[in-house]
Image (cartoon, rainbow, N blue to C red; front, side, top):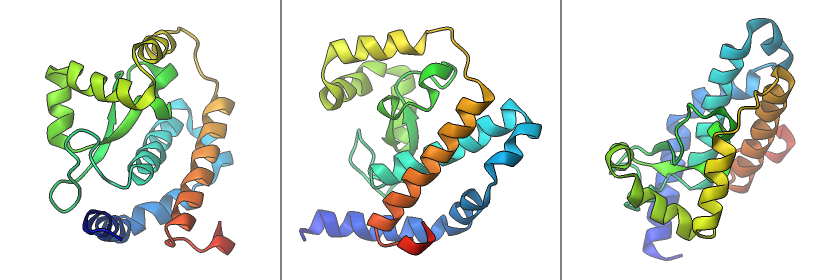
Length: 170
């Protein structure tokens, strides 16, 4: 294993330990209990699990500057604003970003867009994402709950792959 992969693996391990209480809480959520609590409640739970899934998928490495923990504390950055619900929880709309790069992205979206286009197939893919983002269809509660369940299973699978979560618990 080369030095950068070792550094990244150490960072992932430290961050997973740091986030253990949050992950345990996420895995305890009962999706059926979301219904009486309403759309805002499920939105917040989806934001939380989606953010973890993206950061773990990208191994906590900022897609822009390539820095990782402890140098920076990566978060989940979106190319298209989270206000656009059709792409709020779309994996192709989000990558791990440190707070500094995310702030730069606010003022200079062209930087992140160029990186995004390189990762996702060019300008046509970007235009398709923008078209999806501004669609007016609202998600139903069932769709949101199913999305949460899907991301929870995906997150568990990622954690099993990393050796952080026992397969029999998944």
